[in-house]
Each structure stands twice: as C-alpha cells, then as structure tokens.
Image (cartoon, rainbow, N blue to C red; front, side, top):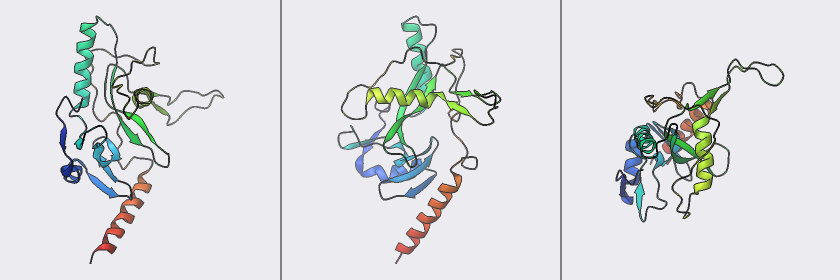
Amino acid sequence: VALSQNRIAPLKQKNELIKQLSKKVLKTPWALLTLTNEGWCVNAGIDESNANGAIILLPDHPHTVAKALQKFLMQYHSLKRLGIIITDTRSVPLRKGTIGRAIGYAGFESTKSYVGKRDLFGRKSRHTESNIADALAASAVLVMGEGNEKSPMALIINAPIHFVSREKKHSPHELTLSPKKDLYKAVFIHAARASHNISKKKRP
C-alpha cells in the first residue's frame, strides 16, 4: 500500500522524517522509540527492509484505503461480507521479536468487549476488551512473513468477527489510547526522564 502511494524516500532522510512524523522520540541502544498517531512504534514505522537501499514510510490514510479496497472487492466478486486489514509490524515491551498489527481496516468491529459479562465462575469482567483487528493482523503476518517470502496478502476464513454495514467508517483512533490512560504510562515517563538525563550528560 505504501509503495502504491510512492511513500518512499532516500535513506539519508530517515532521521529527519522520523522527527517529522513523531510526537515524542526516545533514544534506545537499538533504534528510536517514537510516539505517532498509531501509538508507540520503532522509528515512526519507517522501514529499511525490502526497500533496496531506500526507506518506506507507513501509508497515508490506511483506513480510507482499506475502505476503498473493501468496496472494490465486494463489487468485483459479488460478495455480501468482507473485512479488510492493512498490516504492519510492532515490538511488544519485554517480549522478543515482532508481531503484526492493524494500521487500517474496514468491514468489521475492531474490538469485542467482555465488560459486564461473566466468566466460567460467574465473575463479571470490569475491563477486558479483545483487540480483534490486531489479533487477526498478527495471524496474517505470521503467514505472510517479514523477509523474502513474497507473500503480501493472506486470506482469513471463518474468523469470529462481527461484520458491519458497508456504510460504516472506522475512526483512525479506535484502537489508540491517550498516553494519560495507558497502562504503561509510568514506564514511558521513566524512560523519557532517563533518556533526557543521558542526553544532558553527553553535552559538552
């Protein structure tokens, strides 16, 4: 999707673009941890892999693209129900490796709430909400791969999702939380202070 939008740039512009696309940047020994409209991610989602010496940026308006793909494919194949997910990868705190995430989607409810529902022993859930879009994205990326597999698309059949009407538009912020409400808020505050102190010590 990013390539179709010509979202590529010379490698030398990487650091400049990371700053432009980020609300906050924390230095780490491995990469820059950045806060963007998509949440926390590495290097503002800018990728060097499979870019042939250049860099690839995240696509523009992925939810709009997902909606357009859904509309076209439903008409072309005479489908009554279809969900679309545009994926990227992310790192999870204190876990090895990367997993898939949804950066754009259309056609289905992105979350499933268990709030107020009872578990096996009758206890009511107070907070649990399942992230359907990211769970499906993770399974799709596992099949597509992240190297030279040349599998840019995966088809998920009989997923336990709730389809929505063709007219429904998803907000780009459905799956994002304000940093003030994030469970890991204290961790990021600590990291930001540590990064600031390190940068101050390095000044002549």
